[in-house]
Amino acid sequence: MNETGRNEDLGRTGDESYDVVVVGGGAAGLSAALVLGRARLRTLVVDAGEPRNAPSSHMQGYLSRDGMSPAEFLALGREEIAGYGVELVRDRVTEVTGDGDFTVVLDAGRPVRARRLIVATGLKDELPEVPGVAERFGRDVLHCPFCHGWEVRDEPFGVLASSAMSVHQALMVSQWSKDVTLFLHRVAEEELSDQDLRRLAAAGVGVVPGEVAELVTDDDRLTGVRLADGTTHARSVLFVGPRPVPQTGLLERLGAELNETPFGAYPVVDPTGLTTVPGVWAAGNAIGFAEQVVHAASGGYRAATAIVGDLLMSRLDAAVGD
Figure 1: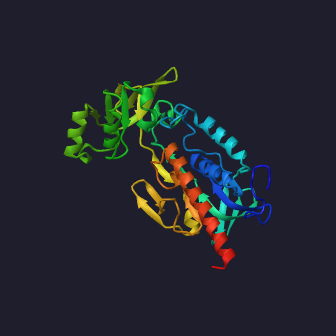
Figure 2: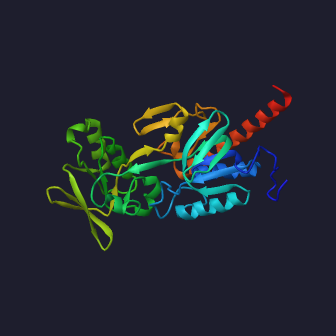
Figure 3: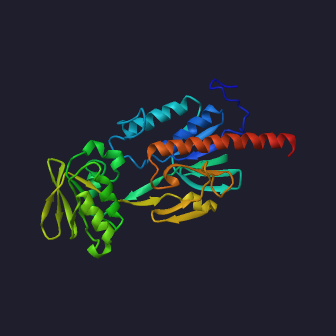
């Protein structure tokens, strides 16, 4: 037994063999790795270093971590898993092959073997192509009121419509400010239902037709939204609806069944995150666009506990010849 309390022969067949390889070093991946390390399983985390919430200076709604920066949160997580002997490499997985015993190829060319996999590769947000949106995303251009609403409460909000579904976003953010304007941008007024219009009116949300040309700033702060016709509406916060792009390439190549949703195709999983591919779990934004940090951490925990039991029973069954 080594200094971390792990049995050296537990699932280890060589320096490049692991009980579990976790693909992704965000909240889901690190949470899973923490549980796996504490269960004395040899674990490798492969982190490409591209967390979804990197543009944000803080994260909210995570009990005891409210207001912490995402970078600090991940740094603490990496420190914690290292204390249990979990290895982490800054690399990218380019290919995975196998069936129950996997070969994982890293971008640097290093192949490693794993008995089980957790895919926590998250997703990417494709932002509306309006000048100023990408540059200010995570500061005063936001997408989630639960993440940032309290910090900008009572300020004049704008909501940039990307589809008729943006009505829901405008209604939701009215919980945090009573001064909300929905900019229809390229959405035609005819696309809004009578119920949409009634709800918007009841919430006090103004509706402005016309394409948005750019954001207006002063002293590196958002001050307004300028339309293509030249009119400018004073706003200090703009909510947008990014198009989520799931990073499911590895799962697709492994043959995992995906479920098409209005927000992209995500793997079909059971309550623990097990995909339709034996030995492969998924967690975090790899299973859905709405997974917040706290949800992702929980999902990683659930996947890891399931894997601990799965590997244990497999070993015991092999020992008794079942």
